[in-house]
Amino acid sequence: MDDPRFEIVEDDDQGFHARYIQGRQVIWSTESYTRKENAEAAVYMISANAAPAPLYDMTASARWRRAG
Image (cartoon, rainbow, N blue to C red; front, side):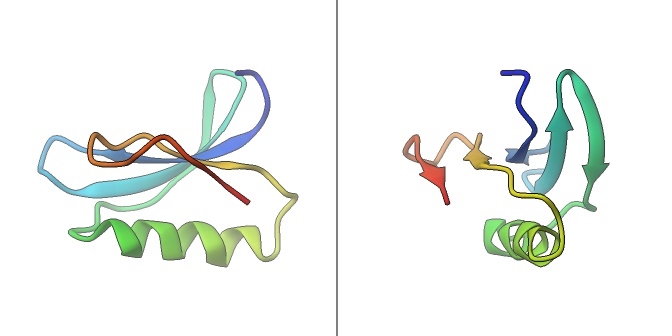
């Protein structure tokens, strides 16, 4: 997975944050949100003005899906 992508991940405090990964490097990351929908909204706001990248939902509760 060296392609640039967005990920939604769960953090240690039972919250969610979004990040943009390229290769093995985290380029961008949000604060922790209590709702996964807020982390997704942050991705959509950034991606509206950025180069296209897929969103991978890496949370345990998600069915594996690729947005976009």
